[in-house]
Length: 151
Image (cartoon, rainbow, N blue to C red; front, top):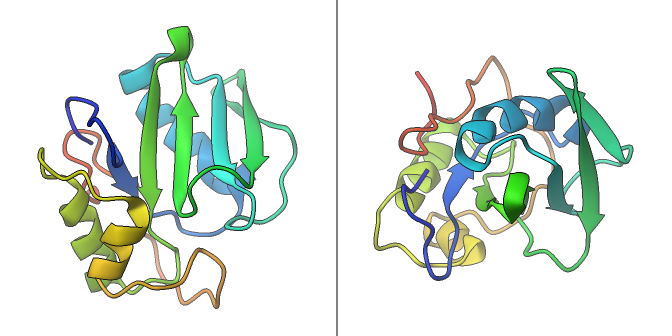
C-alpha cells in the first residue's frame, strides 16, 4: 500500500484467493480499516466477481457491497469514514504465484501511476478475474505496510 494517494493510478494491490466477494471482502475490509477507518463500502467491477448480496458483515459491522460496471476492471474501491478511499488493483486469483508477486511489487513504487490494466499487461496478465481458477493452497492477504503478499 502506498503511504500517499497517487494523483492517478492505484493505491496498492491485492491478490484474492477466489472470485467470491462474500468470502474475500471481509478480510480485505479488516486490513484496509487501518487506512480508511471503519469500511462502509466496497465497490467492485461486477463482471470480475461472482454474484453477491448487498452487504457483508465484517467483525460485527455491515459493509455495503456495490457491483458496478463503471469502476475500472480489476480494481476495488474501498470507502471508509469521511469518504476516505483506497483503490486497489486486483490480481486475478488464477494468476500463478510468481507473476502475481511481480504485479504486487510493480504497484508498490511511490512514483507508479499506471492504471490497473497497464500494470497487469506489463506483467503478462491480459485477462480479468474471470477465467479458470488455477489456485491451489493457502495464500495470505497483502501486507498493509507495503502492498506485498504477507509472508
